[in-house]
Length: 329
Image (cartoon, rainbow, N blue to C red; front, side):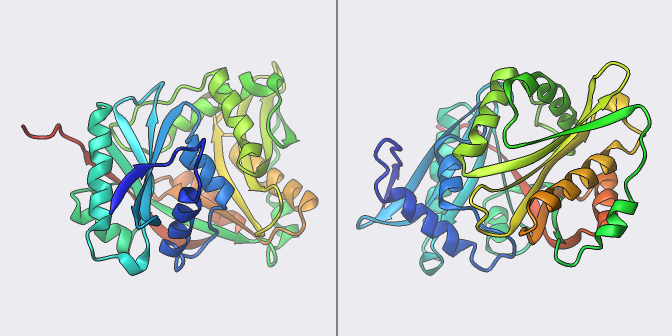
């Protein structure tokens, strides 16, 4: 067995091998799976503003498993995020996952990082592995889905609140350069979301937002976005976004960030944004079958909005943490 990095200038069959291991490891989980293109972007580029390295465990040229480690470069320079970490199911029980995990800890130490985060379903192989390797739960999360084939669209339209003094605007695909400053403003509201106590606020510079928008199409996706503005001065007040595969191949939409800035809360803007965006998406993409979304279980306000819209619980996940200490001499 040999652990080696993927050289994305010459990835060969290592990336496809890692993708096959990812699909096999997650075959029995509900919900959508990442495409090869999307996982390749995660493994090669990581989140905007992060450095990422991806390693695979090979045996006779065949990929047995691997991991990607994202290392923030602008904020949270003390932490790393590992996803995925997988071993082919038929090879489990041989200590291969432990080899990969220990290797990842070595890479964390090499970069001077002290906080490792990852996430798994609350039950199953991943949770047992995390617990056995000294990780503890930092945050409890849940995935919910909305079946667009059975949604009562008239009832959903009837839920649209009237919000005097605010207007919503919409755009499909990545944001143009003229919208980056507004996105940077509203994205700062995501720092109010529940998180590990040792994770710092994220900074949303124009360069970081530009990279994020460029990677929408690089990752084989498109998106539908709505921004709320205050009528009196045009100030951005909140936003929401849904992603879907650019080739419309799997019938899934992914509801991601929704936020309203503190000074604009209390007007039901979150509900207005989410329902308006969903109705527009339905009009433009009638083939979509389901929407999936993540929320911390402690985020009662957003959970109430999702449940009012008809989202139903799919499964529960845990975000895990580990304090990485220097190796003993």
